[in-house]
Length: 424
Image (cartoon, rainbow, N blue to C red; front, top):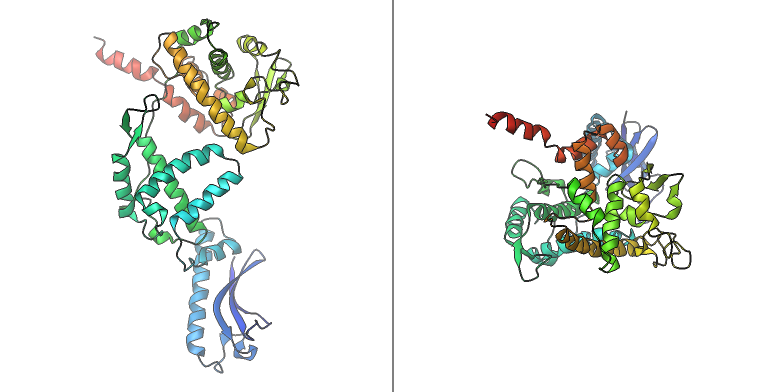
């Protein structure tokens, strides 16, 4: 239960006056909110009745002001208590007024980017930088205040994005419109910066342009997740790449390793160490969520890994004891920014090589490194592997996450329904 009262500091401030605060007590923890008002003397305050005495020249007006502030604090404490997250600090944070100074969107965005750099999030920096650049093209180089970024402003930005163009990755001379997912990602970074400004009390919730009821709604469009067929995977395994540069064989081997280890992510695959292999099992920590686990090492995966045993596994050429060679010359794996930047560049090379390999096996499918995960999920759905088993393999915290992911590859019932209806 929250207790709210007026608190008068017993020691005078530098100007000789005594500041008036609102004291919030919840679970024996206290927080103080300065009201900006002061007393000339402690004798002007009646502690028992919690009122300013009539000896103060503006006693009536000041008492009404303090009653209003007490009511605000009590109402906010009750509101947060019904939401199950009441604390003295939370009430203070909610009541803290928005700073009355001009704050531009770019000020908070620059702070966001600086923090991402300090955290070593190279991928976030690379994607957010491009999205913010496009926003700055529309919004006076980011020199717009948060009240200016209202619903009408964001609606015009959506139109701007839908009319924008980008170069195709494979053909720099050809342009195409931004995809719905790309547009959504551009809106998300604006929302992220806006939320940060609200949390820092640098923007008001009343001006927030995102949500329902006439505001901008952010929806994630569904994207098709298509894996490789069993035939295509078999063709990958048997394709003779001896006449090509090593990157082709490495791209194929890394892709297959990811597939054999239940759709392992490419970052985790590139970071695999020889010491992760013990007693016929692979022990590793998933980089995305920090989850530990182990998997059986299939014979096909072991055959691939053993190709890298000599020349790549020695301490002289591979100080980090990595199985695959693409990160071995980094001074340290602890420099997150440098590591993520190298991985990003390596993945681009691997994906480009996989594009050429798919042409060699006569397929038009996209076989980027992440498609190994989709391919495993597709095969698992076809083999009707139980979601709880897949949850453990994927290391998802929630079974619903696994079921939602697998639903992207569930086509059998729909196919059977079509056959049942038209098969006459």
